[in-house]
Length: 389
Image (cartoon, rainbow, N blue to C red):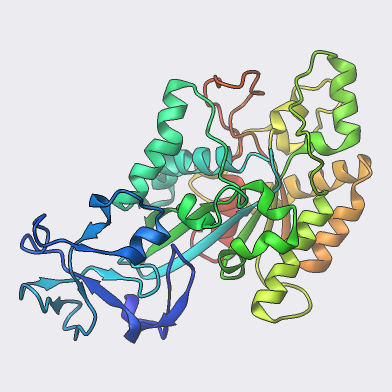
C-alpha cells in the first residue's frame, strides 16, 4: 500500500489534507538540477523561511503529471521522476505506507525539545530490538544533527524554540523532524513537531499549531513536576540552593494547557465530547523526584524501562507506572488534573521520565545524556495502534 492508495494525503510539514489527484511532482533529473535550469520556488521558500535568493531556486515542478507505476515524465526535460511534493507548501512527501503525526505539547520549560531529541536518539539506538529499522529523510537527518545531536555531543544547551510572537510562520521556523520506522510489513513516517511552549499558554494563539494537533494519531502532553507546589517546596526544603529557572511571566496551569489543547481540537475538527486520540501525560525531569529523599516513590517507576530490554512492550509495567503516578498526583493534591484529563480524552496514561538524567545548572553547558524511560510514552502509543507487539 502506498501513497496513492489513500483518498486523502496529509502533508507532514504544513498538515494540509487534499485529494491524491492534487499532488505535484518535482523533477529529480540531472538536467533540471543544473544551476542554469533551476526555477524560483517562492511557495517552498515561504513555508521553509528561506531568505537566500540562491536557495529559493529549485528544480522544475510538474503540475499536470500523469503517473505510471509511481513515475511521471517531466514536461521540461523529458526525464522520469517519482519525487512527489505537497501542492500547498511544495515540501517533498515521504514515500511511505502511512503518515503519522505525534503531537508533543506542553508549556514553557516542560522539556519538549529535550524530549524529542532524546526520544529520537533512543529510537535510533534501540528500535531494532522490536525488529524495526529507523531512517530519517535527508532534510530531517540534518535537522536532527543541527538541533539535537551536535548539542548532545558538545554538551551545549539546546536553543529555545521559536515562539509565535517572534515569527508568525511557526511551522516554517521550527520544521518538523520526520523518521521512517519499518517493520516486516510496512513503512510508517512519524512526524515530530516541537512547538514553542508559549503556543499552549493561550488558546487564541494555538491556531499556529491547531492543524498538526488536530490531525494527530496520538498526543504526548509534557508537564514539569516542579510546577507542583508540594514538589517545589520539598526540593527547596531539602536543598536551599536548588536551581529553579522560573520564567518571569506567569504561565498557564496544567489544567489550562490541557483544556487549550482539547478546545483547539474540538474547534478545528468541529467535534464534541471525549476526544478519541490517545493521550500520554509525561512528567519530565523525573530524576528530581527519584533523587529526593522525601519524594522518591516506591514501585516499578524507579526501575529501568523493560520495553527495549525485552524487545516487547510490557503492559503490566505501563499500567503500574501510570497507577503510581496517579497516586503521587493525588498525594500532591493534583487529583483534579487527573480527572480532567480522563474527562476530555477517552484513553489516558501517565508516565515519568528523565530526558537528560540530571538538572541543567548552566545557561550554556549541559551534562552527559543519561535518559531514563524517555521512550515509554511513544512505545505505549505504538502499542495502542498495534504497530509493535
